[in-house]
Image 1 (cartoon, helix red, strand yellow):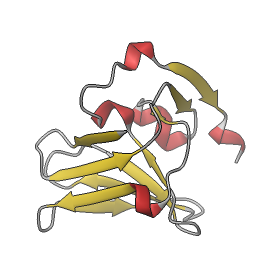
Image 2: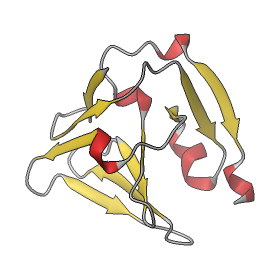
Image 3: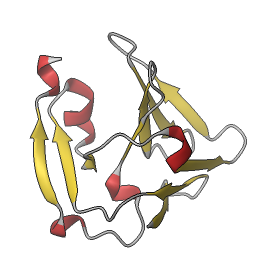
Image 4: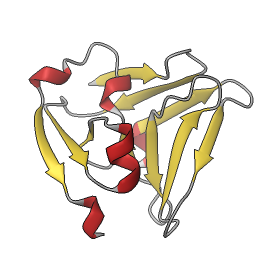
Length: 115
């Protein structure tokens, strides 16, 4: 299936090729617990996601062990996706996916504090 999504203001957009999304994960690490968003349960390879961003709109935040790129819109602040630096595989903020019923997803808790 093709899913489309993006940030609140529309400056960062993405298309995602995926099997039907029926699950999500919520992580309890220090950054994810502050964002409070359901993320894709799987990591998507770079070929599965196409990212479009207005000039200067896509910003990145790295913290701690510098294992992840946490991307956000520099205009509206919404965090649409992240990727693992070593593998370049992405997790998507499912709240940014248009038309996806978050209440219908089976949510798994991820113990990111233990990583």
